[in-house]
Length: 129
Image (cartoon, rainbow, N blue to C red; front, side, top):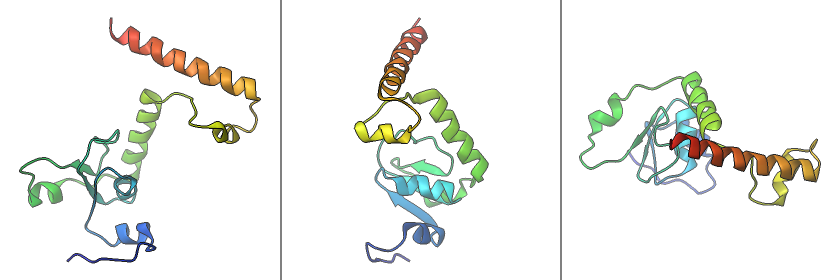
């Protein structure tokens, strides 16, 4: 059945004790995939094709959702490493991200950030040839 819980309930506890995690586009789907549980998402995300995650589509059936093979943590890890290698670039959202790279000087960090964006743009245009 369906249970309503307090907002403060630990999401890992809920996911571990569920048959299916359902979310619009949120990280509970990623948490479920990592924990070896199925997740169903309703929106478009960058992790649509992550193992253990299904995207809602018109006509999807209970059998389709629950017949999906549960992949192990190694498959999930490999998926995220692949996405990291394929789709990410060193950049920042705000200045506090520099704290993640404590051994980098400010100018070194900014140069790496710029070089990453230039490399991404170069790769994009090379792939268009």
